[in-house]
Image (cartoon, rainbow, N blue to C red; front, side):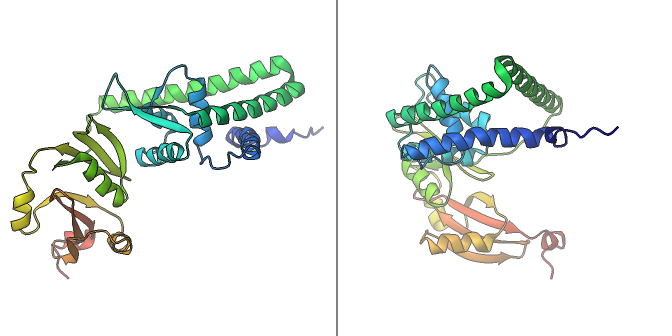
Length: 295
């Protein structure tokens, strides 16, 4: 005799978790919007929820790690929450290279509303499966989280056993770190951190590219850059050089040398920051590089 399976036995666990999470998210969004908090970006509920349960301010780096997003995406998320009045960001007094974030009054009120909405779903769920069922659900989810952490630990252990050169970060000498960071933000970069008061060191990044900024009283390449042709201090590889060039032009950004199709197998253009650092943006053409630039 065939016994029909319940619908939840015929779908994957990730499917169930995704839709269960959506139940909470939809309830919290609806409650927040009803109170006028309709401008919280995606993943913002998570950040606000984490900060609501932290007894102290939390390092921005920890939130970035927990979200599993790129530094740029996480930075933009926090920037948006700060601009919209939900978070405030300060330099960590224990480690001035890092930022800490905390909830503002608006952020605490939003956290209260979303907590009440979450607790309402918890009550509805308890009515369906009972208190013991809810405890069992928590244990199951905790076990699944444990599997993920063990898998991550195994990956990190395997990586540690294999020496890897992971990348290189140019350090640009600038006369004003804040001004330089703003210049690169205008180019689409995000500020990762500014260290010092006033800042004497900082980091900016866009997608996979990262540049560090170091204050010096007199940038030592500024005079050379004015006399030497194409004295490039950093090269940033991109996937579509024409699209980036058009983006910069449309926004009126300074381009010190226009697009050039190079014989060594690439197309590039340059910008020069306020301290005279010449930066090349380039798209390589593998076929031309292999052939030595021959047509």
